[in-house]
Image (tube, rainbow, N blue to C red; front, side, top):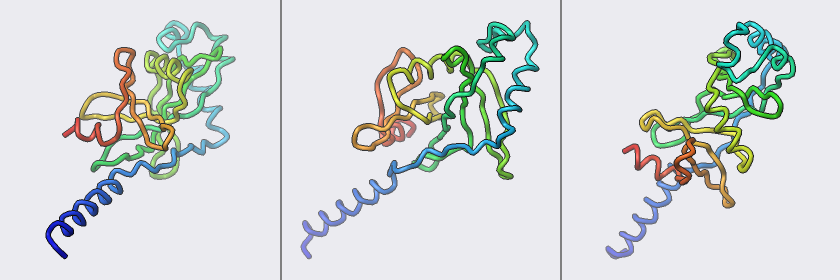
Length: 182
């Protein structure tokens, strides 16, 4: 084998390894909330004092009675150059067909689901706006960049990441984000 053939072979091998390392073939996990979890959420909402309901995008107690839970949004991060699921979902509180706030629900090592945070009214609004025009069921949290991204699959099955903000509408591939972090 001559030098040129060896070089070509090594380059192709490196490209294949890089493609495998940055493979984006993933299945977004759906939480398996126990049946009593909806009751827990309802009780949680009912314990919010009336005078601070507006801090959570809720106008009054009557809205709590008609509130529903939206489709859970899986939360990922980047670890060691690849996507890593955090065992966490952001779950929209839906009132009058609008996202009003988000629950942060974490699945611990005992397979128990816990509400670990509630609020994020502005983020819920961003999710709702984006959902009107795009199909997404996951978000990427990049701690190094202090930025969150919507995760959307393009027409060829590649994941694209769009910053969650009104100002920036560009999308990035996973490789581009990893290079930005570096």
